Image 1 (cartoon, helix red, strand yellow):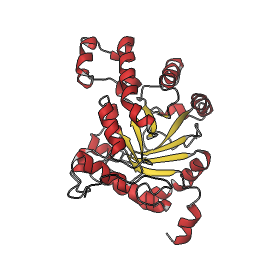
Image 2: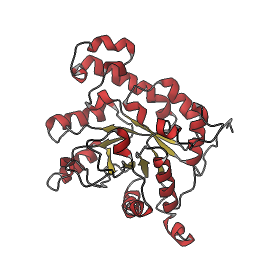
Image 3: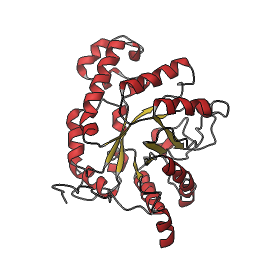
Image 4: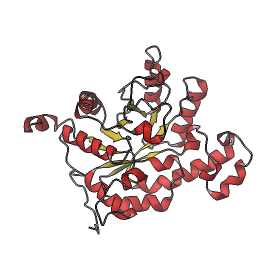
Length: 317
């Protein structure tokens, strides 16, 4: 792309951040993307933040995050860096194995099939989740709490009640919702979904994935919160519904596939203060490679090259 293309996009891309859905995925760690000297926890995050201005904490879905980690994340990244934290599985109605809970809470769910029906347990988990994220929120580094709902989370009174609970429990936080049931965005339902998320000030998560399956989510790019819009790129592998993790996410985006999204991202950027573009095709270094390609297509700089941004302190080689 020529210089004129970058210049033409400079205005509307000011609030666009491109990154990946993890910086600690095992396949990424073994791919060789991190250089020597940047392969411990601190070095990896510092290096990642030198390349991208946003990351998703996907691990928050599998285990409750901790206050200590949130503090360390703020210390190891520039002040313009943002963390989008995926909500713990129990909070979005996913089956949650007992061993994912803190040890002292496991007795409360012994013998129960559905831990999320235990209101006392939910209250405690919500409280711990909020406490863990407070250092990020207080430092202005929390990009969004991402609520990714399961495929059986279909439109209806029960689903709406849970959406409202998620919003009430996170009052004042930036929050976003990703659905896995395409009926939320059917032609006869889309306006209702959009109105509900707008009322709740929840950002809609746009999705890129294969469109060949009955369960494929359409590439809807509704902006339902002025604060933030999100896009998550899951890859276009047709094994999405049945394959292993490696099969489902094994996809390297071509430049042509990424260019399809530039007009859509522009529309989102013109309606929201920030747009987070996150790659979840987490096979080897495919996600970081795709993110780097998208960043170049958008004419964006590496890392957090933003006015007033504090550089790393005590950066390591």
